Length: 267
Image (tube, rainbow, N blue to C red; front, side, top):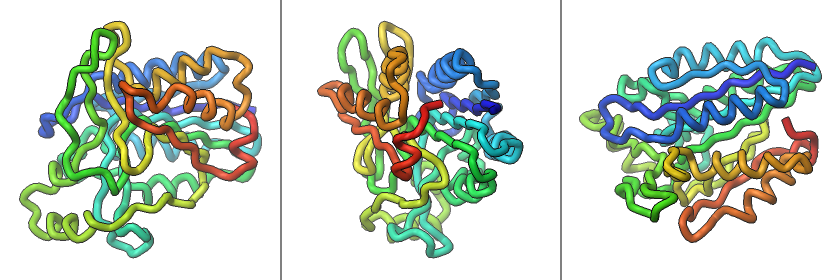
């Protein structure tokens, strides 16, 4: 059985004035944990994490796997959404991960990910860990960074509002307005087991722990995984939920997938 992972962290979003701090550290921390568990890891940070390079690396990750292999994709960065243009979304929105070149009209939509995930061979386990906001139902603009105390000096929402990269495109702006009032139901496409940092109506937070930037969800999950008795995705999720949401980090992690995958082996 082979183990391969792709760990992506993007702090730098040129042209947005909404750079983050902890995403590259998240990617490095996931890489360290996964390598200790026997994974061969590819990393993409900041300018290396363009849409083209992410898709190329993801296709290589999934396309090279065979029955019995284990794959992990981690993404830390901004998330957002665009109006659905092919009528396959009940909420009229395509959720998206924001690559480094998002301001160059380079979008990594859920449709792109799902299409790639469906190419994996039968018997391949695929875990996706998304520490970002990628919901269509969050408010239009994320809140300004706020202080949260000594150990968590700043909270930044990992959400890039669609108006940031659509500004000036009148047709796209009108489409965003039409989609903005539509409720966002949970997607039920389980081509992978997904750990998400927050609910649809919340933000995933970028902050710091003892002076070192990290995502609140990533730091919590990695701390939990130091316990060797955590043997299944469901057990990991349950323990994370004992710690999040909290008064400092009002985000509720989610776990999506079929029951067999949730109760199966972890990494």
